[in-house]
Length: 320
Image 1: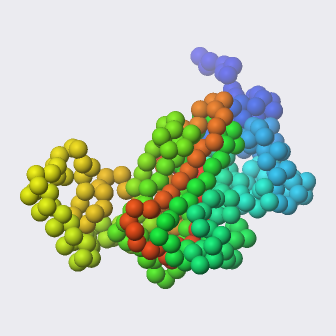
Image 2: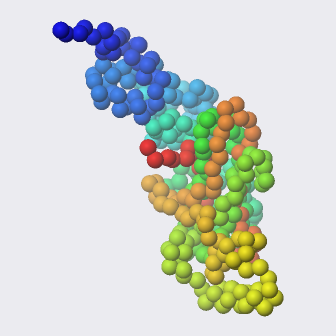
Image 3: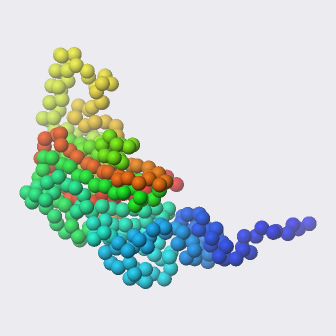
């Protein structure tokens, strides 16, 4: 005997299905739209995509370099606006930041322009110069000419970010034909609320040399550094000082690099490079400045050849 179905979801009104889809995620809504025409039609609804957009998106758009009214008028649906913000970051706050959305979650992403960062000696022409590059999303980028003290800082309030989200910060940069001073001396990065030693502070060892991963893999080290660390090891043995086998000292290779949590530059799809500075989980209702810093001030070498576009803060990618 046939059993009558009383739970056919396709019999529900489209606005009811749209409301249900709005409680999922952009990724799930796109997947469900391929299941049946009922879902496909409902998934186009403004009800769905208005929920996927950040609740404060009108305020964010009002900060756009181009008037928010023209941006809103450009799109016929909330889905079109959502997809545009995923694929085309918009400049806000006078062009000192960019805003975009992570496509599969709708989480907020920002990039702080180099002009929004605090760069030590950044306004001294003999050390840094400000130039324009057509491939940059910002009007100006900072080119490192020659410094011994390399220090960059930035911050963003956690209220600007999506709550309940694990974020990572990335230095976005490119290089001239030759990078100097970063080959064998790592930098240190901090990401925290409350500055160094602040709430959930994390320190990372950062390599800014584009060929750093290859150097590490093949243990390429200049002769002068190799001889220095050989002599250092002999002195430690003679004076009976702690060696790398003793946990009082962090483990260090013979070329001076710290093993373990070292981040190396990676190529981005937009042609720039990035290196992860650290991560931070933004809690619900959290209100504080997320502070980001990168510095190399201990090596004593002069550094040059790096061009900074900014620091990007985006949700930490996970395997789906």
